[in-house]
Image (cartoon, rainbow, N blue to C red; front, top):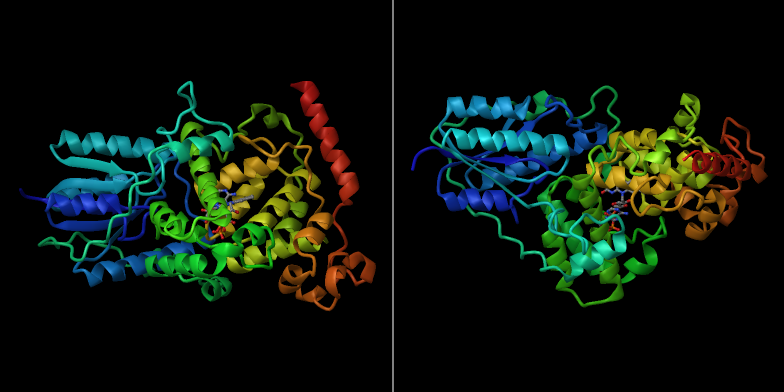
Amino acid sequence: MGGVSLVWFRNDLRLTDHPALTAAVAAGRPIVPIYILDEETPGLRSPGGASRWWLHHSLAALDASLKAIGSRLILRRGPAERIIKEIAEAIDVSGLYWNRTYDRPARERDARLKENVKSRGGTAESFNGNLLFEPWEIKTGTGGPFQVFTPFWRACRSARPPMAPQPPPTKLPAPRKWPASDALDQWGLRPAKPDWAGGLREGWTPGEAAAADCLDRFLDRRLESYRAGRDMPSADATSRLSPHLAFGEISPRRIWHTATATRASAALDKFLSELGWREFSYHLLFHHDELARRCFRPAFENFPWVNDPQVLDAWQRGRTGYPLVDAGMRELWTTGWMHNRVRMITGSFLVKDLMIDWRAGERWFWDTLVDADPANNAASWQWVAGCGADAAPFFRIFNPLLQAEKTDPDGDYVRRWLPELAHLPGAKIHRPWLADLPGSVYPSRIVDHAAARSRALAAFQGLKKAS
Ligand code: FAD
């Protein structure tokens, strides 16, 4: 049996519970691990700035883990089909293995590749490494896809439990000749001029080992208080596993099995159901093309969005005059992450108070989040905007002041991200307009919430009448 096996790493930058790698090891041939930065296949979305930073470090960590077991990571940039063909011409490739991704352009590319490899007499196999359940496995009573989360998750919970995670290989057989590789630094994934990644470096450690530590710390110290604390942005009560999951540094199966091995509790169920929302987003992505581009409810395509770059800029920079909204946007800019509750509030503010198209918010999050995820980001924005599957109804409009008083009662979260308001005591921080601060210190409110709410509801009524 000649030739080598290519293991094509994508959003699964780990060695533990990596079904494609396990299958390649079982095939018994020398293994070439490869990562391809494919920004050229039509329809594929390039990673945003924060994701590029994470990707750099995650690839470096994966290469180090591979070197520890006698291998290395080959890096190539370009359309994946061309790169794989070039490698197959340079060395004898008998097998190609990868874990699946679920957006249509990638699926179509992968299907072409599979055909191509097979037509040349090779093996091409793909696996589920990134979800608990394949999107096509979970079906409604009539055999179709779900559009509502609760019955979807009920169906998942009564399906066959996710497979146990597979251990990492301890040694990988190396080929006699390695194909050419780019140098990681050559890709320029880290920002240089200016270097805005200080907050990312401070807050995060990309890589598989850090992902496993993150899970252990969460289960040891925070799971107990997860149910009560997960809606309080200053409580630090959630797992912060999202970027590790987005890059596949840990598999959802490993999270599932490690978590369910702890004591059963309502907090555990709640945590698992959040993983369920991730599954639901992927279910939607798989069954609906263009989740990030088209409203799930087509009537919303006629919504009279406001196109105002200055207003969008104020939201992006955290200069709306609403402290909780601004704190969230600054947390995002500084750390590449934002608390889920605050994502909902800032999102609602953009779409409903400012009436800016949800796709502008989705793009900003795509660029600035370290956990930017094609399914979760698009599905969550559609949920916030009221145009998604099982979405919050459009007329449920968050009041940013009431939300602030409820979720940040002492103002600790706002105080952390808006130092210019830190001197305002307790919940007074949420009403800086009463403190008479100069506009150079903190802006006045960009809209009056009550008036903005009426405007949004009128637009929604107009949409309903027209459809
Ligand atoms: P935990 O509460 O510890 O949850 C564990 C895991 O479950 C998360 O890591 C995540 O993978 C999943 N999860 C939790 N909440 C949700 C949810 N509401 N929807 C889907 N999956 C969930 N999440 C992303 O991973 N990437 C995104 O790009 C993204 N964009 C979002 C945009 C908006 C407007 C909103 C409202 C939410 C978005 N989310 C996104 C969902 C959610 O905010 C994050 O997954 C969560 O805040 C991550 O923090 P955590 O890991 O501490 O979550």
